[in-house]
Length: 392
Image 1 (cartoon, rainbow, N blue to C red):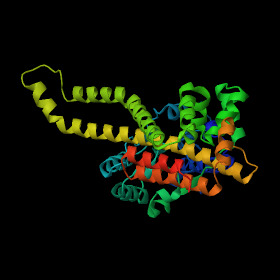
Image 2: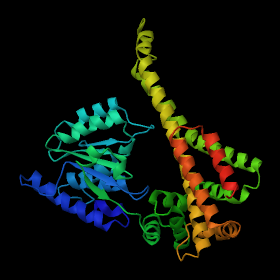
Image 3: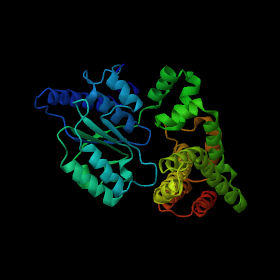
């Protein structure tokens, strides 16, 4: 099985990457390697496999057999331990210019094992404007054996000067059948469970896997999709909004509490907490106060991002619900993402007009924009639930 085995429904992208890996091997052997370039931008809708494709390409560049999937190099890239691959996963809301400059310095070194030094930058669209300018300079004048692999939902999410210097690899939304087949063959999910999960995920492979394998994920989705028919009054709207925000906060707490404690404890040890010797403990801990404050800032930013992502996922589930409502209202012969809730979809479709549905979708998208602009989540979500309740 090659390194591209985890990419679902991306035959065109795989073919392009395989050609580029062959060209890269020519460069390593001393040839010209036409078709290989030093900067790549992987784009596609959420869950389509941007980072998976970038990781597979990184393995193909570092593998003597261009991505066999079973050698030491391929395995090391897979588990994240290859010395020539630098992984960048922004955990907070953005990636700062200082972090980018540190990254550029790391990328400037020669490869340890002689093939390529690869920088795999997930969520590259999270760089600040100043950080983007620092990244641009590195991409404009790269070392001869450094390859940048940037991942972003859309080419337009990157500044045009970076985008113009990258070769774009565009991934598409995989079909429901291909995602369901993946769940069956790789995770052993029965078809009768794989198909509804694939439909509900709307092409998001990670989401489909969680829906198929995790009962808590399915329960939370059911709670979100019960909202449209529960908004019978103002009190119900406020309650639904409060529940959504509370759930996202719980998600952030569950994901960060243990990690924050481990990170803080480790940093305190680095700065000498608990060390013996007169004056040693106090001096080192005081010297690390700035580092601890910086860590706390990053942890708060990470928690905010997780909370926002959790809310955004709920809003996208609701967008999918109203998309199904609109399809029913127009009698469109399309697959419903929420086939398992067809009765609810049809009930909402009967009680409203297509114009009402479009206004509700607009309210959901406005809420997403407000959350991205740091509007208070409770206020933004309450305004959204009120708009969902009131047609016209």
